[in-house]
Length: 464
Image (cartoon, rainbow, N blue to C red; front, top):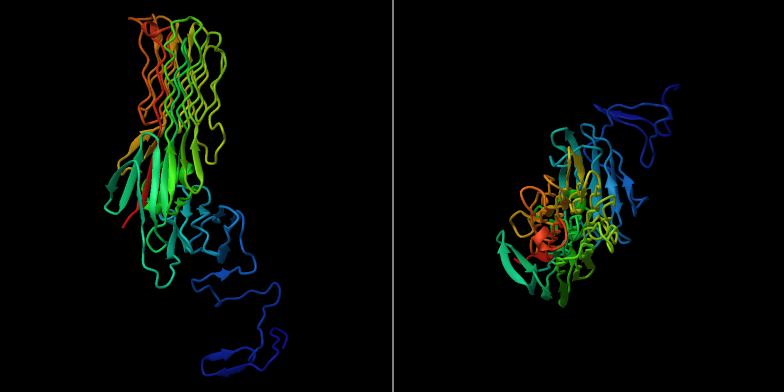
């Protein structure tokens, strides 16, 4: 036999051909090809390689992901029609440390946005994905969760803040000032035992003399999956962020105030006052930093101010650095740069959604920078904007003040003299974390700076 070598006698009965005998392995030689042994819709489970860090999956394979040491991601391979990948929570830790499933490039998962990942953050979850086409991308065809047998569902119950019921089965606790989120029942996995959250720091005040716009307060939030899959904000800012488990105890809440307007009547006015931190001290402490104050052109100003989002610069000063202190995902962005010729103008404050706009030269005037866009969240059931930057102030005839952030939470910048008259700056929106507008010059009568808006803490969970 020159083509096929067998270790046991081949047997043929009717239309069935049996290769090898009981306990005999049939192996194709190196370089050989086969037909008729195609995949039947299952994967080959890689039990000898438990995944503990970010990895790239291969078509036809299934993986056990152990997130006990921290969250990580599974990168899907480039999609081809019929490709199949599975993943399973190794030891019921996805609820504490989520696994993010990231498509290749701009491919989709379950027909979602191009390139948008999904988060697996339920205890014991396992999912099988099959690539269909460019319209739907990877489709989850099997999806299971671990539930302890015989366990009666129990749900989180708590008091604190202003409580509303949304979407029938969910409670929302809104804190606009300090308080305590007091959990009386921690629930269980069969009902609910985690909370989603959004924490926004206080926005900063604008710079007092031809000032940069105030930076927005830091914005941090969980993905929203645990309490109804609402739109928690842009995917890159929330997709890797898991809900927090709770126990029956009280969790302190701090809501950061906005940076006050300086009220300065001095030509040597200061930088804008920074915003204050908002903090939810849950099973993990979530701190969103106050925004960085807008820069002032005058001594003792002259420096950029960092924060949750950075304050706008002025004259030749760059904007302050955002995401300070650093968080992952980022809690904010940097402010825009100022400009000093042919006159002076402030850059826009940074926001949760973008960098502040830099001031720009126009014929015979300056256009101050607009405040950066914030983030829109549906944690309270309706879309609400948070953490936009304040607009920059300006000094000069016919010059344009910095606009408020596009989402409306940051304030407009001010103008000193100019046409037709000095223009007052606008304050950041209360309990939205917006930055205040930069001043046109010294004192309110000359378009002085404005205050930042206070922050907010919102908690949401399934209660029935």
